[in-house]
Image 1 (tube, rainbow, N blue to C red):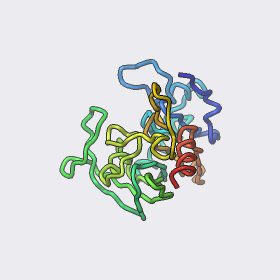
Image 2 (cartoon, rainbow, N blue to C red; image 1 turned 120 degrees about the horizontal axis):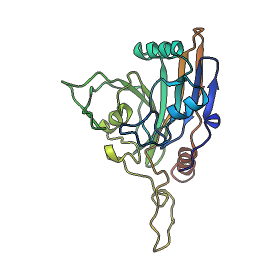
Image 3 (cartoon, rainbow, N blue to C red; image 1 turned 90 degrees about the horizontal axis):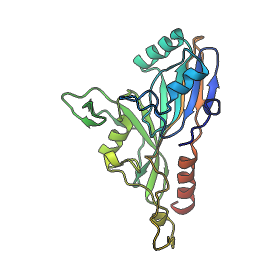
Length: 240
C-alpha cells in the first residue's frame, strides 16, 4: 500500500498542535502485536519528535485527528476530551432512508476487549450520540453524527441499533454499495466480479473544534477522501 506523505495530510499546524486528515486503512497508533505497519503516530514522530496522538479513529475511518507537539499540549486536549469539550462531527452513509432530527441515542456500550462491542444496559459504559439526516437518497441516507462520549465503535453500533447500519460495515451487518444497485442498466462483464464503490465502511470524521493553549477555538473541516467523495458523487447522480 502506498502511503501519502505526512505533510500532505496536515489540515492545521501551530507551535502546539497538528491536525491531520487521516486516510482510511492507516491505524492511528501502533497496533497490538506490533505489525510494523505505518501509522499516524509513527509518521507524526518522524515529523515532530515529541508528537503524541490525542485520540484515535478506527483503522477504516478517515478524517480529522489531533496530534500534540509537546506534553503540555497533550494534557490540554486530554482534559478537554475528559470534560466532553471537544466537539466532533462525523459523516456516515447508512443503508436505507431515515429522517433523523436530533435523534439522541444513549445506549451504554460494553467493550469485550476483543475488537468488538455490545450494548449492555447493566455493565456498559455511558455512550451518547446525536444524529441528523443530511441527505436522503432513494436507498441510502447521509447522516451527521455527533458523539458526546468517545466509546469504541460508538457511532457504528448506535446506528446499527436503529437498523441504520453504515454501508460496508460488515461487523454491524452493513452491506456494501454496488453501482449496479443504483445505476439503471449497469452491467458488468460476465466473468468479472463487481467491486463495491467503497472497500470500507463509510464513516468520516468531518469536523472538529477544540481549544488551543491560548483558549481560542481551533476549528477544523476535513474534506472527504477520494473513496467517500466518489460514493457521494455517485449517490447524487444515480440514487437521488
